[in-house]
Amino acid sequence: MHSSIETVLVIAYYFPPMGLSGVQRITKFVKYLPQFGWRPIVLTPGAASYYAYDPSLLAEVQQLEIQVIRTDHPLESSRVAKSASYYPPRLLQRLYHFIASFYAIPDTKYRWKKRALKAARSLLRHTPVDVIFATAPPFTNFLIGATLAEEFNLPLVLDYRDPWVDNSFHIYPTPYHRFRNRQLEEQVLRRASAVIVLTRSMKEHLLQQYRFLAHSDIAIIPHGYDPEDFILYGQSSSPSEKFILTYSGLFQDNRTPRYLLAAVAHLCKQEPALKEQLELRFVGLLRKRDERLIDKYRLRDLVRITGYVPHAELIQHLAESTVLWLMLRDQTRTPEKLFEYFGARKPILAMLDHPALQELLQQYEAARLVPPTDVPAIATALKELIQQWQKRALPSPNEAFVKQFDRRLQTETLAKLLRHVIPIDK
Image 1 (tube, rainbow, N blue to C red):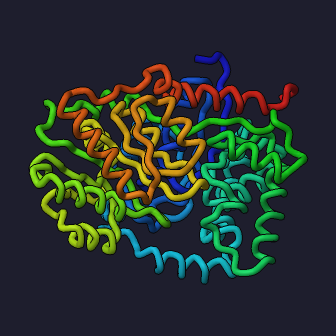
Image 2 (spheres, rainbow, N blue to C red):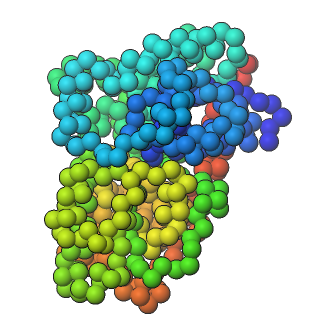
Image 3 (cartoon, rainbow, N blue to C red):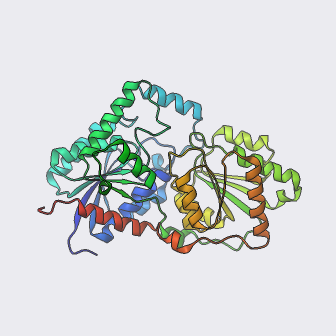
């Protein structure tokens, strides 16, 4: 603990009671910052419209007695408990974002800026704050943070969970829209005292695009896992008689279970007895299109779909699994679930072409890497994992590698960075 307590205003659109992986990073930072001499105050919309809500994450935050300023919605129990049962079709999502992108700059949360600024100004006029910390997406959070930092002469720290302008999934209807987003990104980066990214490739990209940034301006704090979650919720029962292959989370953008399902169908055709040994578990929302794929490959009897579950229950599913699988078809995003897979310390079937993540998985020492759409390679890798399981010879992860992603250690790094940007004379 530290003798002095500093205060950080945390700007986070996605925050409990919202669920899904994008909420985890900031929730765990807020959880552990007080242990390192920081008092976080969170600015967030409230129980805004979203795909999923997680009462367990909300309870975790409430137990910490963290000050949370909610600008929009009261935390009605009925609203918090209601989550979507299906993930919207990709085409519908893309159409919505394309139409919205004409007027929604930098993103569809731009309308929150006015309400957030009003609430934050009221706070900052009466409450001493040492640093502003904004996490994105949505990148509206960065604009809010930069405005407040300028008005109140405060240091600003930006936390990139995804790229902004050069994100391959961002839709720019005209060259002007891309130009305007680049202008905004440059403005907030010039105002920032420090920047945090997830990977070295993200850091190198920012340095290349914005030459005024120095290497020392950008820190790398990857996603992580909370060991306490696995102590509380990750106690697996006795070894399962089945080989449980689990996918956690959404099939966003161009991700799909198609190739894994095709590989499983191929294996079961070769060895019908596998149908009695295999369980494919999907923990999270599925698009209806993906459910139809399950029927197409005649795998319904092997599949268990949980729908969206609270984070505590997700950890239980990871602990019960034999192997965890990841599917990624781009090099833009860094899925947070991978780091909880590390925390679960289970073998990983990684279907991806992402050099930075491939390097991490190789260091993990318990991952099988295959191209994301190569059905024969996926089938071969899965067959070998099943054979290792039958012989009780599945690989174990590198424990020293896993421990570096402990959320508490990462928050200690963040706490030091926040303290570093406070002016000496303050």
